[in-house]
Image (cartoon, rainbow, N blue to C red; front, side, top):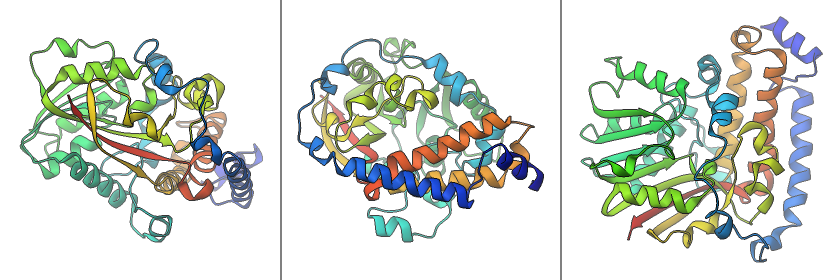
Length: 353
């Protein structure tokens, strides 16, 4: 491992916890703190390109193939190196409500991910007998948690990622895994392409955890989801949001978002309060962004702790640099400035009209 670290440092790729990287993160955090502080008036100022208009144009999603190729269909050993071992959850973990509580909470990543799914289940009002559809299910972390705690659920999940689908199928074949032997169906495909609304089966709850960052046309997405729900059915969203509105972050070609998540965007938190003709908003919650900063920081630490298994065998030097920059920039550009009040996660409980 020491040889890999030395070679990477010589190539200008500085490891987690190094003096050079810590200084770089501190300086960038100060810069963006000043930048966002000067733009606080954006919370109340009108924008020329309102997201309510943008979100009703074009296809439901864009650049899905590129997104899978560039990010989600990378080698499984990469994701295993930094994600939690219990759920393989590739979304924010939950440490607390306030900055002080988040920073002081001394729990493992695995425990924090479990707390996130517990929070989501409580806010969605899970009883234990529902028919659930999960959009963009990742490696099946929500499904794993739900079946651990509500074994009588019926769950159907969809992912366009070949790597994620293969991992989930492996879990269902493992008798010791919570997904094995349950009323669970996996669809490998793109939610926007699937004729799901033509199926006779209707669901009580649709979950979209870490998905709506990749939705281009919200109206089409909500129409599709509404067609899948029973009357009065619920939709629960969990996604990265901004407190002010940043129009430049709604087009991935204008920012570094496109480098890591082609077709991705960050919607303003207030958007979903009045967005859909298909749903009414029961309740929304802003989850402080330091939760995601702490999650990313632990992913970053684990990434480097497993570098001896990654460098050269899984990732080239330039690929190590790419992912190192990804963890760093997500932490300091989005979630660290102003104690997580600018970027965080939005939780929304919507009910079908």
